[in-house]
Image (cartoon, rainbow, N blue to C red; front, side, top):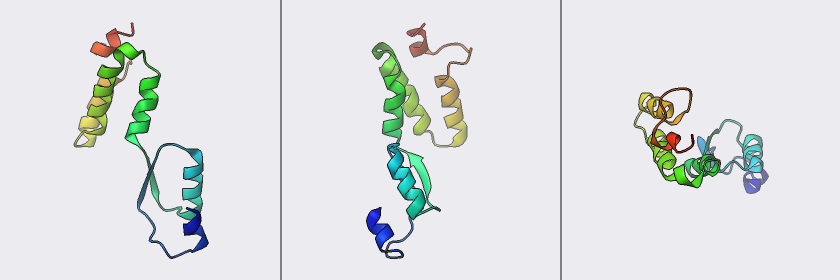
Length: 99
C-alpha cells in the first residue's frame, strides 16, 4: 500500500480488496484507493464465528457456514443464513448440541 501511495497513478485501482479484518489494511485501502470495494476473507470470518462455538458443534456449524458463502445466488445464501441463525426457529442439528 505504501508503494502505491508513493507513486500515485502507477498502479491501476483495484475494484475489490479482500482482507482478514486487520484494521490497518482497511484504513490504508481507504486512504490509497477510496473507490475500491472491500470484502472480508471468508476463511477468517468463518474462523472467528466458529471460535465462539463449542468444539463439539464446530464441524456442523462449519458446514452450514460453507453453504452460505458457496451459495450460487443471494436467495440461496439467505436461506442458508436462516438455517444457520438461531432465532427462535427449530434448531438445526448443531444448534441442538448447544442447548
